[in-house]
Image 1 (cartoon, helix red, strand yellow):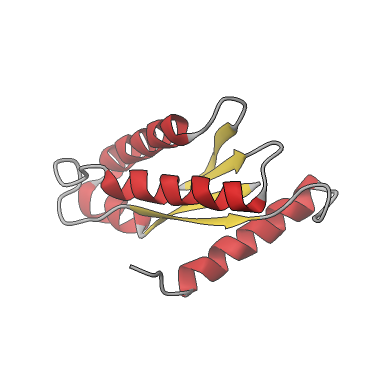
Image 2: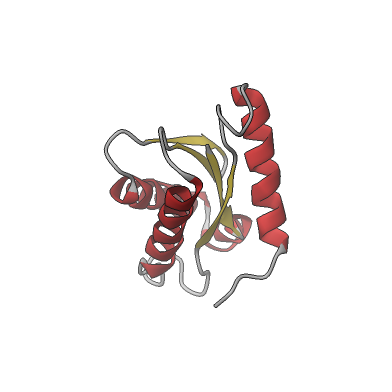
Length: 125
């Protein structure tokens, strides 16, 4: 289970308006859907957060999908839609089942905390 959060999204709404923010969210949803594999699940959770479920996926596979998501979101041309406001995404992961939580709510909380921790950790370039 992955919790995805757009970085600095509040600035999109503040600088460019909520209509532009809604379009950004729709475009991010499209990017997520393009990157996912058959059988994976993506949903907007609220605000600028999305949840992804990757059934029968190893940690290594999840991190490869994370790399693809981060790359695809940052690779979009956002300048025409929200000039001067870069769009990026941070993801936190948790395992449900073997080696992880047996409860979805607990896994969601773990993934959410992992996402928040990732936001405070500098990324490798």
